[in-house]
Length: 211
Image 1 (cartoon, rainbow, N blue to C red):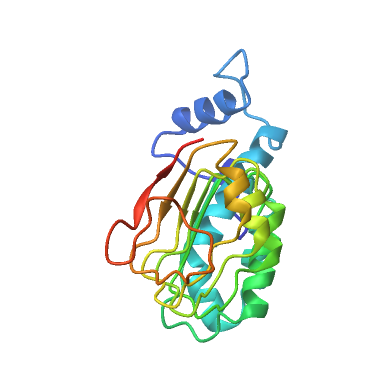
Image 2 (cartoon, one colour):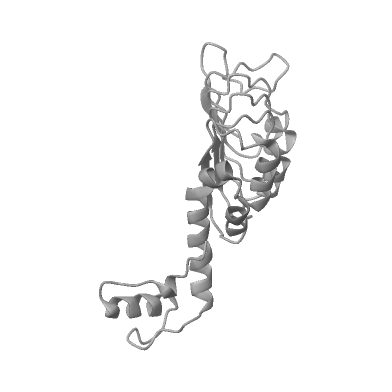
């Protein structure tokens, strides 16, 4: 995870100089670029985070995910997406560590194909979260109450989670404040679960609850 854009090469050296100076908003794009700059640091952190996302599945399989988690924590990423289909190494403990490493800047989480029965509570830290995609988590049965309390959440998908039976009652309060879209396709919600007014087993399972 040692990405450093200032150490990168370009096919034309003049282009490399211009790029580095443009990143730090230098007045003279032709001057010798600085070896270090806070804007370099920000971009390097973002790039390391993206490399971490791309290599995370393999890292978890190999038991070397800690470096990915460290890179994610400082990345400032807004979107996180990972699939763990048939990944036996993605245990609840690993999931908790992953969710604890996601930066507070994250606005969209996609976490699919896991064997998790419950959503890690560390995700409640992500108060900027707008979209939560949990499709195809075969053993996921319910969402905790805090999910409905996330202040900016606008979209939730548990589609194809075929053991999913309960949405939290906190969504009832949330839709009084903002519109939320739900994708509940093939989710057998129980009678005592909170449900969108339009939801019907064997009928409509996708829609938006308007405030």
